[in-house]
Every structure is written in C-alpha cells, then in structure tokens.
Length: 97
Image (tube, rainbow, N blue to C red; front, side, top):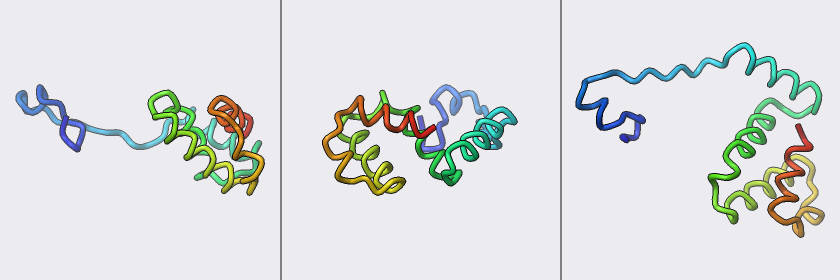
C-alpha cells in the first residue's frame, strides 16, 4: 500500500481509489445522540469512539496512555484513573457513551 492507501494491484491496473469522507445519515444521527446524551463536544465523542474502535489493534501501553490522557482531559480525574488496568480504562470510556 502507498501512503494514499493504493494497493500494488490498483497501481498495476491503473485504477483510481475514491475515499468518501462524508458521514452517512446513520453515523450523523448516532453522533448527535452521543453528543446530546453525554454533553461532550463532538470532537471528544469522536475521539472516544475512535479509540474504542481501534482498542484491539493498539499496543496495550499506547491504548492505556491514550485512554488516561482522554479521561483526564474530559474529567480531570488523573489520580482516580492512574491505577486502572486496561479493561477498566476501556470500560470507563464505554460508560462515557
């Protein structure tokens, strides 16, 4: 793959990769619901959702660091989250949504 996510086969065939970055109606509706129900800014809801989606693909140290930073930014609970393990951090993020 290239940086633009084009596969070698696509390069050989001369195909064009089109990325549709417009959110679907269902995605917008889910985002609006999450923003209203949590009171969090849309950007923060998006960050939480993206971290949870990628949780399994990230190294444990990375995801724990990201989760702690995000939870601290949201709630300022640095002391209360410092002792949480990986699963507890993931659960705390899920509870936000």
